Each structure stands twice: as structure tokens, then as C-alpha cells.
Image (cartoon, rainbow, N blue to C red):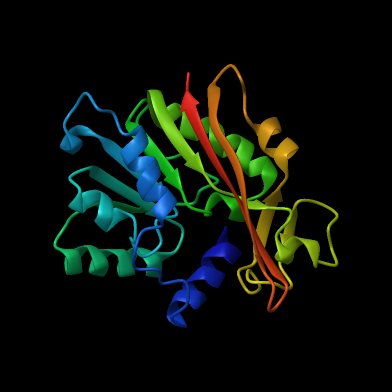
Length: 224
């Protein structure tokens, strides 16, 4: 995690990966799966790998009780500034995703991962998914969006001894170690006694000009 933190702190210093606005599929997930039987202010939502807060300000602006964690100290500082810019508040924590989460059991209604957990190993992700299950309320939903093995950054890699590789090319070059998933990889980390799979979509976008493929899974799980 130390190497991850250094890489992402440097990327933010260089003005990279400073997405200001929320991703559309995250917005859709929140409005579709947020509980309809209680006020928004009582609905707790966690954004794992919150970055500079592009989802947090949206969540807070809509009235949800927003929480964000990230492994990059600089990202957390950016998030504080962005929340202030939009005149809203959220709870922020600096946290290593491979460690136990600093929250109580059955705490959150929704948990979001917009391609942050794809930066930890497959082995670590199995443990982290158990932690997510612990802090999510029964009936709560988790959005998981790892990168697919159809991604150019994986297919053009010279070192594919495992799913977890130090990216050498493609749009993810320079972001460090990334774990890529195929359908079986995703199914193998999901315990059917703990989770119901509500969505398993692979989004593939092929840029015909530079022949790059961006590929990502959109997985939605419900805690049983």
C-alpha cells in the first residue's frame, strides 16, 4: 500500500486523476438502490477510494450521509477543498484498503467502489470483500467496478503471470499495480451465502483511432 500511496500522491501533485464530477453509473446506482423507506439524511453511503471527492459532494448535495476513504493523503486534502467549494460536508478518513475498515458492523446502506479496489491484489480483495460485507447493512448494496482482462493495459502487458500486474501500457500506464478480472475471477470472490449478484456487466469501449480498449466490470451485490 505504501507504493500505491506514493504513486497516487505524485499523480495528484502532477494534476492528474482529479475528476471533479460524479460518474453517471454511480449516480444511477445510488438513486436505484438507496432505501426508499427512510429520509436521505439517514442513509449512510461510503465511497471507497473517494479520490478528490467527486462522488462525495454529489451525495452530500443530495442529502445523503456521505463518507469517504482514500489511501492518498493529498486526495483527502483535495476532497476537503471540493466539499467546501460546493458548500457541503462529508466524513473523510485516510485508510489502507487492505486493512480492516474503521467502521462498525452493519453501518452503511450503500458502498461504492469506482475502480479503486482494482488496485489491490486478488487475494487482498477477497479479504476486503469480507470487510465490506461486515460494515454493510443486511439488504444493503455494494457497487464494485474492477478493470476487465479485455483492457489494453492488460492484453498488451508482457508480464501476465497473474491477474495483478505492474501496468506497462495503455490508458492505465503510470498508475502502478492493477488487478484485472475476468468473469470467473469475479464469481470466485463472491460467496453465494453472503451475497446476491444483482448486476454483472462488462463495459468494453474500443477506440478505433489508437486501438485502445477500455474495459471495466459493473458489479452490484446485495448483502444477504
